[in-house]
Length: 512
Ligand SMILES: [Zn+2]
Image 1: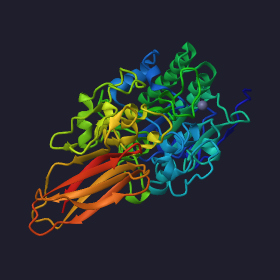
Image 2 (image 1 turned 180 degrees about the vertical axis):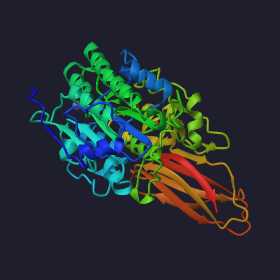
Image 3 (image 1 turned 135 degrees about the horizontal axis):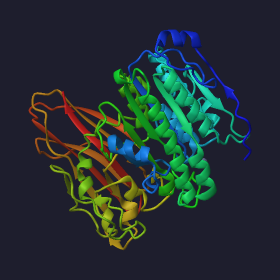
C-alpha cells in the first residue's frame, strides 16, 4: 500500500485561545498539528486505546513493558468474539461492538460493508457522551477511515484527528497519532479520548501473528502506550485527576495471518483497564468486548439508561452467575479429541445447591455432553466450528449447556433427556418471583426445551417452553406466588436426539 502525506480533518469546538485561558496552567506551546479541544470539565478522565487485530496471547511473548505494567496494575479479561452468521471477525463489527457497547445483532454491523448499521439507536460512546454530558471535552484519533466516515467512533467528538488511509482504507499513521495525542494529553485538557493504532493488524496480515515481526509491531505500539501514559503523568494537574486507561482490540489473527472467520485465534479479544476502583492484577472470566463502553460510562460516574440497551457491564463488576464458581474445577476433554488437551473447559458437577436429573438420559454418547454440562465458550465452541455455537455472546464465563448434537457424535442408545434444577428460593409472603437468565436455543425436529416451577417441593408445573430458535437473548419470567407457597425451585428440561442445543447462563431469581 502507498503511504501518502497524512492529511488531517479537524473539527474543533471552541478556540485555542479559550482553551489556554480556561486551563491557565499551560507550560508549553501545543504542537501545531494537534487539533484544539474545548477545555475539559471533569476530574474523571478516560483514555481508550484501540489496537487493531492484537492477538492478546502474543503480548506475553513480546517485550511490551507498558502493556504488562497495565496488566499488573489493572484488570485484564480475555474472551471470544462472535463469528458468522452473527458477524464476521472483522474490524467493522469489532470496533462497532467496542464503541456502542452492544453486540452486532443490535448495532447491525456484520462486516466491513457496514450495511445495516444502526448507530442511530446504538451510538458510539463519544456520541452518547455528547448527548448526556455535553460539557466533557472529547477527542478521537483514527486512521482506519470507516471509523470516521461510517460514524463508528468519531461522531460526538469535540475534536478529531482523522488521517487518510489508502484508497482501500488501510492505516499506517500510528506514529503521527501517537505524537499528536501525546501533545493533546500534555498541553490541553481533554476528558475522554479514543486513540486507534492499526499496525498490529497490517503486520498480522502480512507476516502472521506467529511471526517475530508481529511481536515487534506490538512492542512499537507498546512504546506509544508508554508515551501516552507519560504524557498523562506529566500533566500539571495530574495529582488531582482520576485517570482510567483502557486498551482493547477488535479481533484476533491466525498464526499465518488473517481474520474474519471462526477460528479461535481470530475470535480472541480482551479488555485491559487500569483506573480508580479497578482491581490490580484481576483476571476475571466474565468480561466481554461490549464492556469497554460500559466501563467508560462507569468511570465518568454515568449510570446508563436501560433504554440505551447496553449489553456490557463495567469491567470491575463481577457477575453473580452461580456457574462461574465452577471455573476452577473444569476438566480437559474426554471424547472430544478435536479440543486441545490443555483447554480445561467442562464439568458435570453442578454448583452448590444445584442438581442435574439424568434418570431418563440415554447411555453412551460423548462423555462431555451426557446430560447438562457446565462449560466455557472456548471449550464448547471448539467442539465443532460453524454450527452457530460462536453466537453465544450473552453468556459469560461458565454456562450450562445441553447439547444433544454433540452427545450423539459417539455411539449411544436412548434419547437425550436431562433436567437442570435450581436451588429452592424463599418466596414466603412475597407476591411475585422473577426468573432472569440468558438463553441460547436452537430448535430442530422433536427437540423440546421446557422450564418448570416446583412450589414447596411439589410436582413441577410447566412455566414456558421454546419451540423455535432464540439466539442468545436475555429472558425474564415473572410468576405469581401461589398462596401458601414458601419456596420455589426452577427446572430446565431438554429432550432431543441428534438435534441442537440449549444454553442457560446468568440465572438470577428475585422475589418481591
Ligand atoms: Zn485486518
